[in-house]
Image (tube, rainbow, N blue to C red; front, top):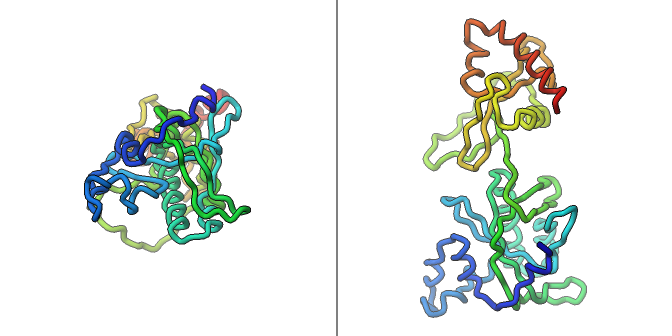
Amino acid sequence: MKVEDLKPKERLRVMDLVSEAGIDVSDWANFKGGEGKAASNPKYCYEWSYENTNKSIIVLNLWYEDIKFLNGSIIQSLNMRKVAQDVTTSPQSRRAIKMDFSLQKAARLNWPLRVIICDGVQHEQTTGRVKSTAETRLLDSELWYVQSYDSDSGDCLLIRSQPEPRYVDQFQHLELPEGEGKRKEVTGMIFQRDPKIRNYVLTRARGLCEWCGAKGFETRSGSIYLETHHIQPLSEGGSDAITNVIALCPNHHREAHFGNKADDLRNDFLKCIMKASTQM
């Protein structure tokens, strides 16, 4: 598909497109204009992003003018944190910050994005134009996803495609279900584990236990869960390196710690990842 094929041609209402994307819009009618003017409810109609956490849905408004074709993919680069600093009104800044939070959530949980593509006149810092006006809109039939989000700068890259499989382990943040008990602060010695090492190992495993080949289970966010294990424990002087870390299913991870053949497994694991590393 060409970028030009995504150019909207109709003046469709935001509320209708948001609803089509899977967001409940029943509350839009809950203002003095009532159901007849629900689509123009200022609480919702000017927003740049929408969420339904129960359905893991995020909807973004993106400008057609900013969509590019690069290396075989349709993309958009954006930095809503910078937009929040540059815009001239408080409501615009709030909307930009809200959209930035949505992008962070999508990146962290690997949620797919539904995109409303807008075409019209954008706000321009150089001309002093304060308000952007979308003259035409469409809801893209394809999903997008956050390929990268820089938490330091806010730079974000969106790709028009299904989200790539993401692998997580026991040390990565998984969104807790509502009602989960509060975390309790504890003190003690903690060994540093480099997330880059863990991510490399999880990618090397491709979602499969590197010992038995069993597929990790899928989390609520759609990520594949395995557990990373230091073959020679850090507490015994083991290194935090890809040559000493293996991705295991929870069952074999427990066996590696508590099984009566744990010592034998250490040698077997080392041989296993040496073979896996040569195939990367």
